[in-house]
Image (cartoon, rainbow, N blue to C red; front, top):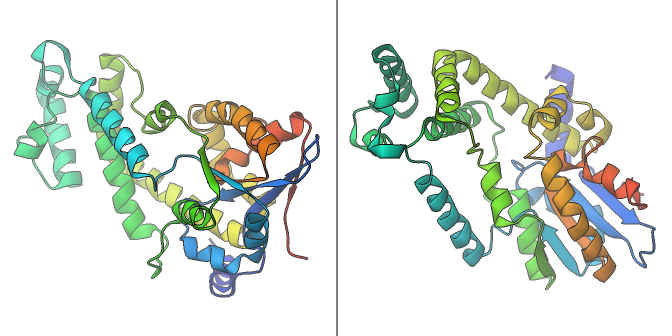
Length: 313
């Protein structure tokens, strides 16, 4: 990010233009009243909505609110956590084997080095031993998650805000206004997002060894991901959806991860159409779902709706 863009971003964060958002109006095709959708950047704090009057105006016109998954509902979160535990249980190795049965001496030593580097523990420590019976994909998942977490702490956007993140804040606002709450994702869709992919044991082992063998490159990649999220936030604050949609980072995500975006978008569309026919609805979900030929904007337009970005008058 060059100095000029950084200064612009800082000004945007402190002053917030009146239309600081990726907010879109959905109309036409027989709708008596428009519905709206807000593309969010998941790392933004909900306090930004206090400086987005266009969102407040649109929100007031809606009777329903749809989110990806209602993370404010204790029962739904309990169901998700239980499902995660069941998924983990299904990822154990067969015949009582452990990860050490799959690894050569040299591979074990390398995994041990990375585990110590990432978690501050040896592979033989008690917490790590509890993972020995799991398939290699579980090790890959936890190492990747820790890398992302540490990189976010070091390189991610700094904020003094104590408010909820934007997706949760949108749900809480909707509930406060008495809006009916709906979900776009089913439980199984959320589990897929966790990235426990159905690979053979050999493929999982190859993925794990690629990760630990090229650890520095994975850290560099995680830093680039965080920088891309920061740049996305800048574009969000400047309502520059065009530049956001052209980012190489998002184009790569769209092409490389159909489970994350394309397949979920296709499942969401019928729910969105049904909700809009019932009552004016506000949808809020990650802005990446708006993008590309398989994005929500294009899907809605293909279905005969007018979709236009809302900007201040």
